[in-house]
Image (cartoon, rainbow, N blue to C red):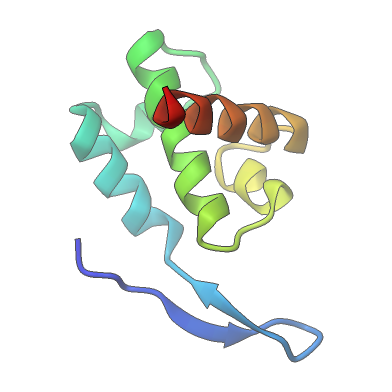
Length: 95
């Protein structure tokens, strides 16, 4: 995927990267071979879906989104759920 990030100003006037979450959702869904709607589903969905969701959380967090923003994007998941997902995805990359 071509990097579609641009810099946008937040409410404090600070520049931060912006990637459209839906675009990244499509990329991760394609990488894992599952439907994007399954990643955003409130159901756990099995191992493949959980792995894809963790990876999406990691990538969005790396692009500058807060845990709260990511949780809201993924169907109002709690920020601590997103934090654990990022940690799991990073641990898998480090292994």
